[in-house]
Length: 363
Ligand SMILES: Cc1ncc(COP(=O)(O)O)c(C=O)c1O
Image (cartoon, rainbow, N blue to C red; front, side, top):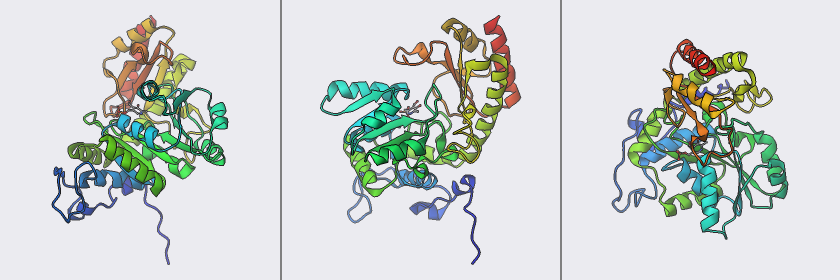
């Protein structure tokens, strides 16, 4: 019998099954909160067919069981509360994740949620049932961590690994296939892709973790709205083309920036051991950081940009720039660090804008 080649992500994005997509390419926006007796669902906080359509697409790409949440933060909360006995978050995680960890520690000291900057020490100190949460690439420092190696080391100790893969997206990286137990995404970024919806998703590698996460979602009520789930689903249909294009543009811009300002540029694509075709992450992704010597120079650069909008967030179709340490809670990053989220504009136009803004800021 002839073997079929597995279709590429761009193809599989159009084909993931879900019940009411049998009628056409798009799911219905299911707005019911209550269901007549005998139906598959009972109440809107338990499940919803529009969530399921979005979850089916993400689960198929990541190779696990996906659960949609109200936001990336709601997804992270469910992971911290329900996956491991104790949870440790690697210290260069997204500012909001670190704030959530300190908030949980303050209010529920009996719940062991901690932050650590020493990954090797952290892995060595893990006990059976513990959970380590890390971001790769991390936001906004753009560090990349070896998922397979860390998952193996944690599994030897009976511990678990959760990877926040928001910056990589399932187009570039599939952590479950590398041994991670859980994957987290802020769907507000690349998955929905148009800066018009807050959402989150967790993908569990097995049924036990999936049911713990489903219970956490139901009890904390951090559920995504059906309209938001539809928008996430809709965004996913173009995920591959958006991410591939934005990542290719970012790779080109990062190289040109490196030729211009050298070590000020941070880009996951520069880590050739982990990033590139056939490696953990297939390409560098769409986020670049530029570390200016002072916040004043960084601000002058951001002010001089004309095509890049001065705004927070990442993963949308428009390019954004932001000096991260404008937030007091972003206390782990150099004060001159500007994060660039590369969108879908013409690469030459973006380069001219960056080049001109650098000239202005450095003059
Ligand atoms: C890596 C990462 N994880 C989680 C979050 C939180 O997601 P949300 O804003 O959807 O709650 C963000 C938001 O910026 C993020 O960048």
